[in-house]
Every structure is written in structure tokens, then in C-alpha cells.
Image (cartoon, rainbow, N blue to C red; front, side, top):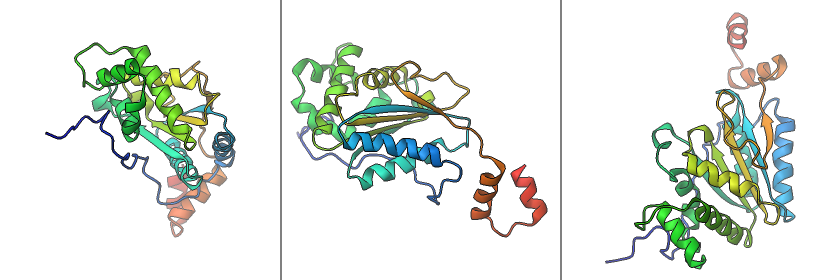
Length: 235
């Protein structure tokens, strides 16, 4: 029977999952926010890691910013790893981490045995209790190994729905990024506690667009609205 072990099977990584790109690539009123993301990606190109957590209410553009960072990283030929938190999986330990690391599964064979076993236990491949510290170390080592080939961008969207062990691993990694060209971007809703508060992240809190930027965005999508309808939508 062929080895179907998703962690140690030696095969080329599959295509990483990515946030869905918006229909338009113009981000009105987010020039400073985009500049901050570009700065982090430029730092990675010069061998320095970094982390940024983005927060804001529903619909303010967190996922759109992450998608812009994804595109920019791919233009730089960076490795992009991503995970999307979903409520239905928030109770499954390490479900989010599984999303993030699946493209690196072939690299796991080169981990130190204790770390490899810790990661296998996290994903239910060994009948032992998961060791959170060992899993975090294994994750850091996998990212460091990947970053030795090309800088890495790690994106975690809707982190308020990620399982808590994955949140803890991401916070662990974020505190130890200085020596590797790895950028970690996370996004969560303002009304929920930031799972990475104090974890070494810079923090960006998105605000609503001002009237001019909101009007430009609406006109780019629906340029022929009647004045009364346009005013109602903007309101």
C-alpha cells in the first residue's frame, strides 16, 4: 500500500491556498497601509523577518489587504503559505496549522526526530499527546528551512476563528522571526480579542474610509448611480 502520510511523504508541495483576490486591485484610502505591507516584504528580501496583525470590523478590507500582500509576495517570487479561520473548525486543535504547513510537508522528513514526531502527533498521525512546545519548534524549523530557499510570507486571515493551539504556535513564531526572512500577517475583527497581542507583532487597526475615498470606491464599482441612490449607499 502506498504511503499516504501527509507529513512525511516525500513529494513536491502542492499549490498553497490563498485568500480570494478582489475583482479590483485598486485599494482606495489604503496607501499608507499598503506601504507598510510593502516595507515588511522588502525587509524579508533583505533577510529580516517581521510580523503584523491587522484588525478592523467586518467589511473594512482586511482580507483585501492580505490579498494585495499575497500578490506582491508572489511578484517577488516569495513562498506564500496561508490559512483561513472558519468557525466550524475553531474547536479542532491544529486545524489552522495543518492548512499553513501542508505545502511544506515534504520538508518534514528533514526535521529532528523529536520535532517530526511532535508535528505528526499534532495532525493525528501518531497516538501520542501533542506537545505544543515541540510543535511550535517544528513549525519554526520548517519555516526557517523554507526561508533558506526563498523568503516566506505566512498569511492567517480571520484568526479569531482559528483554533487556539494554532494561534499559540503563530504567536510563538512571531516572537522569533528576526533571524529569518519570514513575514507573518494576521487579520482579525476588532470586536474580538487580538490573539497575537503582545506576541511581537506590529499592529494595524483599520478605520473606515473617509468620504472622498468611499465615494471614489463606489464610483469605480457603480459609476452610473442616480445621485439620490449614491448618497444613500454612501450613508
